Each structure stands twice: as C-alpha cells, then as structure tokens.
Image (tube, rainbow, N blue to C red; front, side, top):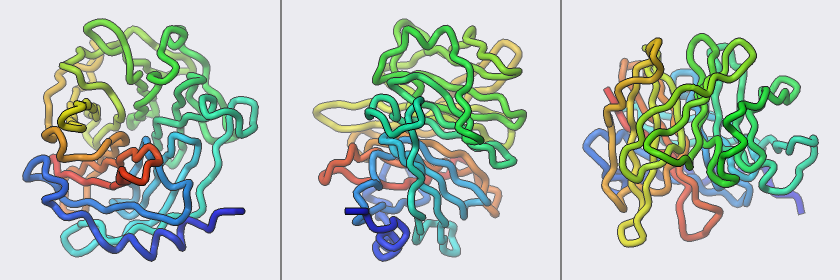
Length: 289
C-alpha cells in the first residue's frame, strides 16, 4: 500500500518540541524537535541543510529518500513545526532502486544557487542532481570501507566540494576535494580520539565544520563539532566548538551551519534513528556564536 504523504502525517504531530533538558549538551542548545510520522520512510536521517535563513529544510535518509520542507519558528528562533513534502526517491547507479548498499545516501550539500550534491556509501560516489550526474571517482575511494565511506559532504562558496569517510586508518582522516572537474585526495586532518566524521558544512566566513560521533555501550552517543580554517596548506586548526556529554544526545549525523536574522551562527543537526521504534529522529539546533 502506498504510504501517505509525509507532509500531512508530520504536520499534525511536530508542534511539540524537545525540552532543553532532554538535549543537555551545553548551555548553548537553542532547541530541538522530534520528527514523527505515520510514513515509514521518514527515518534514518543522515544529512541536513537549513536554507532561507532558517525557514527551508532538506534532509537525507540513508535508505535513499530526499525530504524537503518548511520550518515554522517562534520569536526566539526556536523550531515549532516542520512541514515535509512527499520524499523524492533516490536511485542506484543503474537508475533503478537497487539494493540498499547501492543507494545508501549519507552526505548532502547545496550551493548558494541551489545546486544539490549527494554522497553515498557502499557504492562510493558523489552525484549532482541535475540529470543525476555521477562525478568522477577519486583514486583513494577504492580502499574505503563499504559501510564507512563518504559520510560527510560540504560545498564552499566557490562550489568546491569536500567529502570525508567515516572510517579510515591511521592518525589522519583523508579529505577529498573536488574542483576543476577532478578530485584532489592529498589533504587530511588529524584524528582526535575515537570520534568519527558524520557531517560537514561551511559557514559564511568560509570556515569548515566537522560533526563527529562516538558511541559507548555503557553511556550511549557523544557528539562534537570541530572548526577548521581553509588555507593553501589545506584544513588547519580543528578546535572543538561544541561537544555533548555521553548519553545526552541521540545519534546525531547531519550538520548544517547557517546564520539567523539575529546574526547568530547556528549548527543544525539531525539524528539517525536506524528506523527503530526505540530511537528518536530529532532536529537539534545549537548556537555556536
């Protein structure tokens, strides 16, 4: 049976936000919203982009669904409701739905003029939505883990793409940069602790932000955001600008950095519920500046 449109199912239940105490990861949490729907396709969220000064919403499911919608905010800027349209169904490389490993969409990046790019695990690739163009393959992708490859994707103001794998070996994390029609895989950033990349974005000053996640069987998930400067030598710095304590946040994956009408720099994140009835899908927002 065809699932009902997400917009009708979500709008009826999203007016109730998450309490700040439930999202305690620091005093800078702006707020959050639980995403519930009778449409079983809404889940497994792996990437998010907030557009139009906080009113536009786009998110990916790791099962190949692209959701777009509109956000309603109160006078303080907190999300009060989210209306999501019927999802777009993403296809595998052969233009068909294909096995899950061929449509495991993980990273989402939108340029200033609205061009949309998606990165995938399993069948490692990055696509441009115009005609579903598949970008060239970087040589370094061949050795990536099937379930830990192109997890994070970001685009800067010039249109240069950056993508990072979730799983990598050694003391550094490779950074793949796409410009001029080809990939440069000579860059990297230092690994720090057990945290792994799960989302990335740029701010309006051209700085690169990386969302990372760790998991403990005893205490649950912890998340943090590191900030890097883009220089001729590559990404430098890596200061932690936000971090949650273990067990205070859900399984955060996607990251969107944007500035609101008050001039505040906001980090919006979505959680992957793994399509489990026991885990939440949440949109969390943190004030970074």
